[in-house]
Amino acid sequence: MKFSCKNGILIPDQLSPSQEHSSDSLPISKIETLPQAPPMNLHYSYNKDLQQLLSGKQLLLDDIPFSLQDIQSHYENGYLSYRKSIMIEKNKYTCVRCGNQQKHLFAAFPCARCGENCVYCRKCIMMGRTSTCSPLISWRGPDIPIECNEPPLHWTGTLSTGQGLASKAVVEAVQNTKSLLVWAVCGAGKTEVLFNGINTALLEGKRVCLATPRTDVVLELSPRLKKVFPDIAVATLYGGSEDRHLYAPLTIATTHQLLRFYHAFDVVILDEVDAFPYSVEEALQYCVEQARKRVSSMIYLTATPDEKWRKECKKGKRSYVTIPARFHRYSLPVPRFVWCGNWQKPLNKGKLPANVHKWITERIHDNQQALLFFPRIELMEKVLPLLKTIHPKIETVHAEDPKRKEKVQAMRNKEIPILLTTTILERGVTFPKLDVAVIGAEDRIFTESALVQIAGRVGRSSDFPSGDITFFHYGKTDSMVKARRQILSMNKEARGRGLIDD
Ligand SMILES: [Zn+2]
Ligand SMILES: [Zn+2]
Image 1 (cartoon, protein in one colour):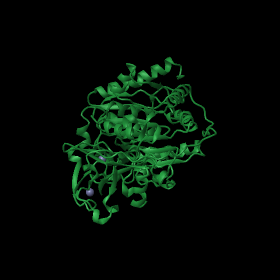
Image 2 (tube, protein in one colour):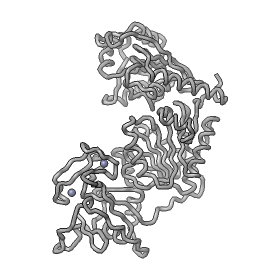
Image 3 (spheres, rainbow, N blue to C red):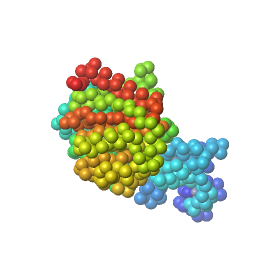
Image 4 (cartoon, rainbow, N blue to C red):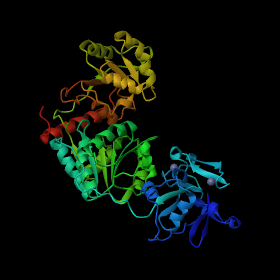
C-alpha cells in the first residue's frame, strides 16, 4: 500500500481521488518521517468493535475485518496510528514487529499492493507479512476499562511456606510495577504462586499476560486459570486458536503471539525463561518490550536460570525470590553419575552397555516405570528392537513423532513400562512414580538446565517423593557437575529455611 501525505495526514492511494494519484506517494517505509498522528477528535463516534480488536495490538491490514475507509476515518480522527512495519536506515532493514535485523531473513517480492519490489521479513512471516508497504495499525483512542469490584480469585487451596513468600513477592512486584524473578525448583508449584498477584492486578484494573514458549503449556494453564478466575474473560492464544480477537483482562499466550501486541499489558509473566536458547533471548526480550506497557511489572518464572541471571541475582542487580523446596516438603532427588564407557559403540550395533541394560531389566522386573533420555533420535531407534525383546511395550518418542501425544498418554495410563525419549520430555510432563536415566549425559545437548529439568521429573508426587535419577556417561562434563551442584544447593537452602522434612 502506498500513502501520500497531505497537510500532515497520511492518505492511502486507494482513497485519494483518482486524478490525484500523485507521483509522490510512497510505500510507508519509504516515507522518511511519518507525520504525527492527528489529534483526537472527542466528538467522533468511534467503533467499539474496532476498539476491542485493536486495543493493545499492532495488526496488519489483513488482520482487520473493517473497510479501509473505516480504518482511515479512525486514523484521521486520532483513534488509530499507522506505523512502519519495516524500518529502512542506510539500506539496513529492521522489522519493527519482531526486531529482526538479519539480512538473510529479509527478501523481496513483486508486490501487487504497491506495484514495487517490496521487502518483507521472513522471520515473523507466520504471523502475516510485514513489508515495506504494510503499516502496523494500533489503537490510540480511549482504553477499555477493566472493571473488577470483587476479588476475582476463587481458590481454596493453600500455599506452602516457600510458595507463600514467593506469592507475596509477586504481589509486591505487581503493586509497585517492578520486575521479579521467581526461581522455583521443579515441582514447587509455581502456578499457584501467581494467583494472588494476578488477583491484585485485576482488582487494580490492570491487564495481565502469562506467556510461555510452548503451546502444550498454554493448553495446560488455561483451564487451570479459568477455574480459579471463573468470572473473568481469559484469552487463550497460540497458533490457530480461536480467541485471536478476544479482548480479555487475562491473556495466556505462547511467546510468539506477543508479536501482535503493542503496549498492551500492565503485568507480563514470562514462564520458562530458561527454555530459550541464548540466541533467542534477545528476540524474545524485544517482543516482550513491545507487548508490555512502558510502566509495567515483569515476572519471570524458571526452575533453572542461566549463569548470567544467577550472577545478577547474587550481585543484587536482579530482584528475585527462590522456592528451593517442592510443595510436598521432600528434598529433590540427586543424580548419580555412572560411567558406562563408550556407549555409542554398542548402541550403533543395537546393543546397550551392560550397566544400562541391567538398570532397565531391574525396572521391568520391579514393575517400575521409567524415562530413558537419549541425545539423538537415531540412537534410541537403534536400541529399540533390543529393548522390545525385554518388554514388547517399550516405546520411543521425539518431537516429530506423530503419535507423541498418544504415547505420553499411554505412559500416564501405565501402558508403557519404559519410554525412550529425546529432550522433548525434559519439562512439562509429570508421571507420579518414575525413575529416570540419561544415556550419554556428557553430550552437549544436555546442558546444565536440561539436566536439572530431567532430574526434576523424579519424585514429584507426594505419594512417591523419591526415585532414582542416573546419568550414564563416558566422561563427566561441567554441565553434569553444575546440575548436581545446583540441586544440592537448593536442598541445602530448603533445609536451612525449614522447608523440607526429610
Ligand atoms: Zn508492497
Ligand atoms: Zn519480523
